[in-house]
Image (cartoon, rainbow, N blue to C red; front, side):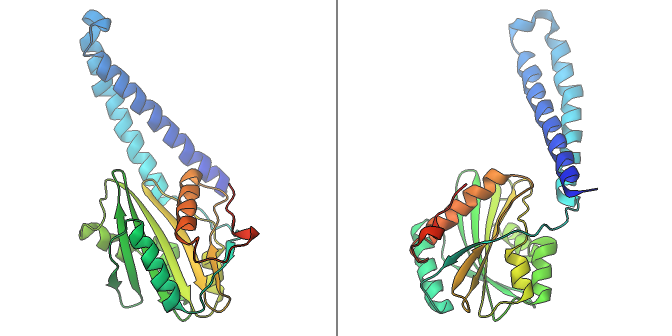
Length: 253
């Protein structure tokens, strides 16, 4: 099955779930008001026993599809911005200051056998935002594969299990991988179409100190493109004083 057909399948499943949810609330509320008269019990049964069950089934199927469906990577062009700093330390200190002023927590470290991540969290009513920074001499295959296959699953599980983020909210992660020199895996990371999942959103960013550029991955297809644009705009705000001001530093939709 082609990518566009898989995306259509997910969209159809989402639409059915949304329609069932609306009907569920209509009949549930209707069962409690006099407008339905003596048929209130009928609408109650219809809302809870039938539409409610269909809604749960549809939502479960939709969630499974969004988590398990295999969408093949699409190569895209990343957005590139020249930065003012030539070393990771300079870039890091400036970004940390900006993020602290934007309401993020102090940075903490998460370590595995393959990588370490410095991260900070910002909480809002409906969203948790995470900045996850990895510093490597170059992006190696095993680390790229961990991102590609499961978006650093160990790190994500740790954030939830340690209650750094709330799994009932939208969780938005800015992955910022910094390297001293580029590699084919770094190029694949920054030029791979961004894919989003229900309530789990991400923005992959690469920083190369060999070229002194930030690379922001693009999303040209797939689920939640408006969420991608919001995350991109947020990140552009964070780096507005880090990038060199020029015409190509403007973000367009």
